[in-house]
Image (cartoon, rainbow, N blue to C red; front, side):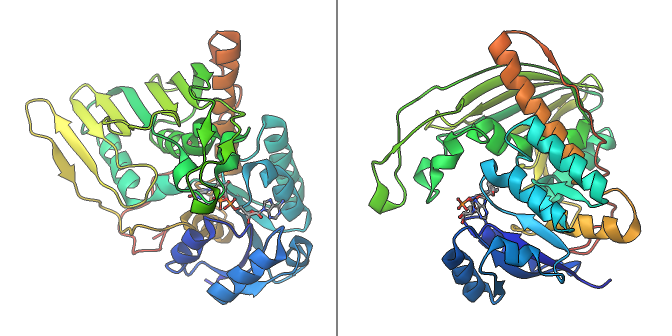
Amino acid sequence: MKALNVGIIGCGNILEAYMKGSQIFNQFKIKGCADLYPQKAQEAGDKYGIKAYNTVEDLLNDKDIELVINLTVPKAHGEVDKAILNSGKHVFSEKPLGVDLKEAGEVLELAEKKGLLVGCAPDTFMGGGLQTTIKLIEDGWVGDVFAVKVNIIGGGPDNWHPNPEFFFQPGAGPLLDIGPYYIHALIAMFGPVKTVEGVSFIGNDTRYLTSPPERRGDVIKVETPTTNFGIYTFSCGVKCNFSYSFDCYGGTKGAPIEIYGTEGTLFAAHPLAYEFTASLKLRDQEERVIPNIYPCVDTMRGLGVADMVCALESGRMSRVTGELGYHTLDIMMSQYESSEKSMLVEVKSTCEKPKRLPLGLHLGEVDV
Ligand SMILES: NC(=O)c1ccc[n+]([C@@H]2O[C@H](COP(=O)([O-])OP(=O)(O)OC[C@H]3O[C@@H](n4cnc5c(N)ncnc54)[C@H](O)[C@@H]3O)[C@@H](O)[C@H]2O)c1
């Protein structure tokens, strides 16, 4: 397969992980990058030995680039995704697919009209740890799954991200920023979500930036809920109890995803990474760690892009579809709506459950 030429828009914090991760994939090659600030693109170009475009338009006008990875901040995702599609290129967007459903829907409609593919992060559910977890569920190790508990409780990004303001604006918060990792993983396990009940609120409205050192003490304006609790019911009947918070500095001692079945409990591999492992506690047995049955390493950002390229080549469905990104956003927006109206909300959209990766892959492969 000839490697597809890929461009990047948005040269911030997460770019390095994509540049490192992409090294293990031969399905695509990152050729160049652009940013709102030309000097950021230039610095990235020099650091990674790729072409730095002076403007986003210059990158979009380059006929050699066939797919663009959108690594801008959430409020720019929709606008940048549409510009990419209008230039005739496929897009893989960081999450969320948009800051609201209107914007995300416009991206999907435009892609359909242009005959182009949209993919949406996160792709960590395709990592070895979660694919092994999914195989254990499919093979019935915990019997019939009836409930799941998701625990995303922490102190937020104000002490590690160089520009953490966007995490506290609409389009982020723990629900839209971290929720997609867990929701994509759970859709890959149990399929789409039917109803959502939730409460969302700001637990701590006075936040001080503690990174980088020269900005220590700057006040961060909190403009989106920072603690969210919810009950999601999947179409298959499984019920999930979700907690997401940026307000709890002590974190949590609970496992990120606990899956309860009639024969035991499965502690899923951590959905924020690719290579963590699952563990299994069956009734009357000691808990044991289950080694991953898929090849994986710590940073595999770009796995979803590799999957899209293979889907384009073979005509099969990709695992990181725009519909998955849209349904995930719809679930999260339904949580906010449920909180505002104090009622159970029916999720209007749906999506296909992404297919588990086949066994027998080598590192970097997504098809046998
Ligand atoms: N930082 C992480 O650990 C991390 C992890 C996973 C996913 N993400 C996601 O990746 C995206 C980027 O995160 P980040 O941490 O790299 O943010 P960042 O603020 O460090 O970088 C964003 C970059 O996008 C550029 N940009 C903003 N609007 C633009 C526009 N309209 N056109 C062109 N460039 C534009 C900014 O100038 C900046 O260089 C976010 O959606 C975030 O949720 C981040």
